[in-house]
Amino acid sequence: MITKTKIIMGINRFQSRNGSGSYENLNNTQKKLYDVTQKLSIRSGGLSIKRRDIKQMFRETYPGEKGFEESRNMLADFCYNKVNFDDKPFKFLYWIGRGEYKFVDFLWNTGSQQINVEWTMHELGNTFKIGAYSGTEFHWDFIQLLRIIEDLRSEPATETIPVN
Image (cartoon, rainbow, N blue to C red):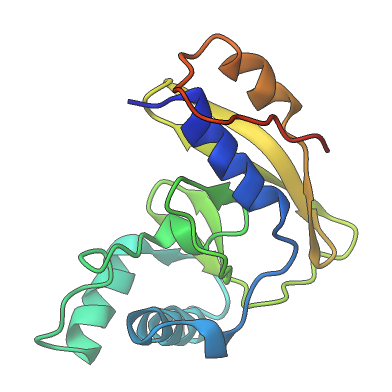
């Protein structure tokens, strides 16, 4: 069940993030996933790469190892334009659409282009715009989400609603 407290905890975690992390801070499985997506991107000439191709190359490159998803590493966790409750602070992918990604690396410089950041909450049946990424920085805006969570059940706890 999704609660106001759980969402506020996520907001507090996201609003302190401004960077995209680095290779050195990835765990072993995450480094392997990074390496696989980077190789596939080079092979594709920088075009989009499919989730199925990433999974296949991961299995072929690291046979006998637990897959990245079994290690609680979902591809969306590494996308600049997606966040979720188990989100990782390491970003090197751009989500294009269902099962399709683009490798953009750490410290992606979008120039003046603004990329919306979305948080899909399946329990609420909705996707919320919670900010943007432009240049090399995240810019958070939780206003839409804060309006929605007012109607959610609160858990007994100390809840503070963040202010941007």
